[in-house]
Image (cartoon, rainbow, N blue to C red; front, side):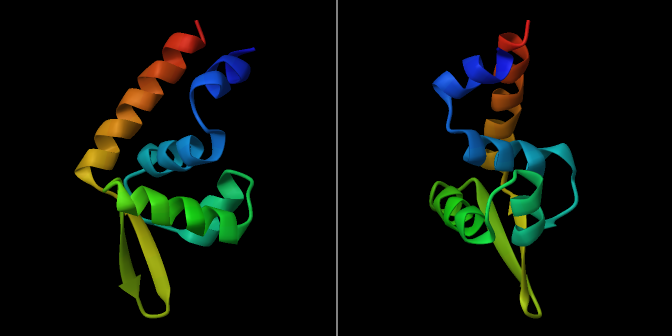
Length: 90
């Protein structure tokens, strides 16, 4: 029921990606995030590109791999999403 209440207000995959990035301070790869939130790599990349447009994530290129990090704004949004999720689970 909690997941259903949360899904009413938010798109599941983008929210899960933000929360996954917020969960740990280390940078992540797109493919790892895709596996964590159970979506395809191409879908995760599309979501991450949209999150970048809103200033929530940034990409850092290391060799052939792009590392994804939350921006300060993304961290703030993720914190609020986490609190809302907790409120809905009560």
